Length: 191
Ligand SMILES: *Cc1c(COP(=O)(O)O)cnc(C)c1O
Image (tube, rainbow, N blue to C red):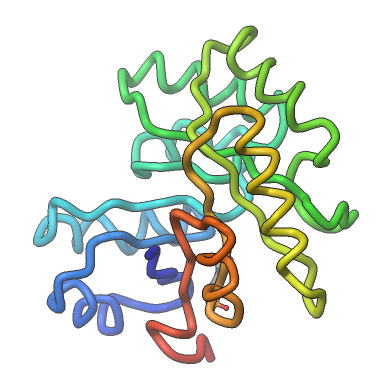
């Protein structure tokens, strides 16, 4: 389980660390840069996962800070990440975000373009994509979206599936999620 700590400060995160949890998600690079270095000084085995949209001018900071990046969703970002991974010598796992609901306002690669994008990441950028991530449309039955993500991952031989949030993690787990992303369910309301 990824505990999504966005918008929560160290006062809320520390008790979760002290309880033994180590896998955390953040959706903004800058917010994570401000919060996590001091926390990591005390808890060096934290795994920090980027679950929000990434701009290519933040690729350097993201590769330096995060242990997993879940939101690779276009060639420009894939290229920038490949360059930084090479430069920094940090072979961090990457997931591709799929816009399963094909929503205009949402990040992610279109389902029908995902196979080609994964091949491009591998062949053109030398990147290994370890899995897929999605955020189903608000208010929709999430099950078909999770099933679609699992199907695309299976046909591409990918093992990681980041899907499911506080409201729908049970169904995500039933449909094969390897990482559910829980914010409210761990930390309470974000205010
Ligand atoms: C905020 C967020 C979550 C957690 O949502 P909750 O409903 O609070 O569990 C999960 N995934 C992403 C990408 C998020 O931005």
